[in-house]
Image (cartoon, rainbow, N blue to C red; front, side, top):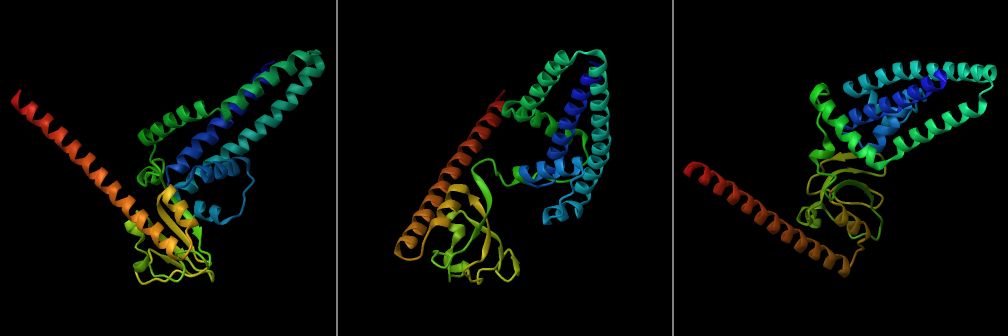
Length: 269
């Protein structure tokens, strides 16, 4: 029984270690999916050689996190293997196969629920994030929060096709910022990357654009085709963005007025 309990505790700690490491990696500015993948890869010692891995090891903070994960992973996996061997030997000698099996299955079921529950993940991630920010020394910014990626905005890739509305136009002609969309980068088919391209850059078929803006507007832009309908869709998007700016200005004005009234009441008292 002690060996089974030790096994479950070791697996629970392994889950916690990878979850904490994934959150720490997210705080260095990478996506949630990439952080979870790299954390589990380092902990298990799989070591996928991808361009994402290069981005991890070239970053000093991420590299330090991965080194700790590799060390803990080697210790944890060895402990699990040894514990399983001891458990099997104890079961064979005691003859309590059925009870041990029920205990093991119950513990694994709990761990599966713990690792897959969205409710637990949401609250646990908040606690881990707060702890890392307060006690950690990551010296990086949370780019997900900076870009407001959880508030309807997104950074997305879009491959340009020959019939797209974007094709053959310069960024000056497209006026995408008037729609609330920014082009952060452009990858040419031949491999050339243009970071923060200027207004004279021409969009060509098979270019890959790195876009930032409202997710629904980026999705609509990806479906927009050349011609009169595409031009009309652009004008509608411009009008919608202008209305959004007006609404945001009104909200900001109301907040400033509330602050001013509070300050006046404080001065009178």
